[in-house]
Length: 84
Image (tube, rainbow, N blue to C red; front, side, top):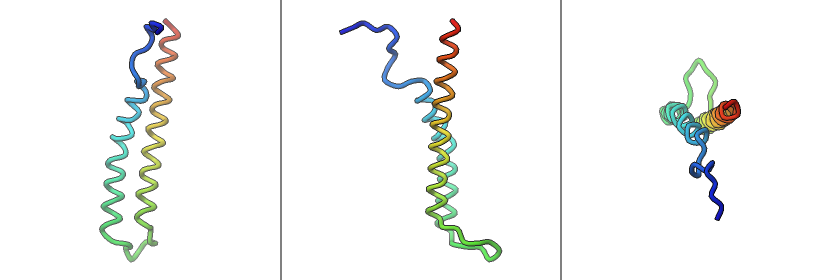
């Protein structure tokens, strides 16, 4: 078994922080979409929007934000490590 001193655990810092960022942004978005979907279908002045589509959009937005945060943090850490 090789002794790899660069191994620091199973998850990267970007993966862990990306998950946290996705949770911080996604939970309020999903909560608001769920409340909106459960309160009623339409208001008289606006077109009807399917609540499940809003929930799916909120989940997609939080996933995209999490992946983007993960990639940005990992790229920053690689760049910082390369300069040392």
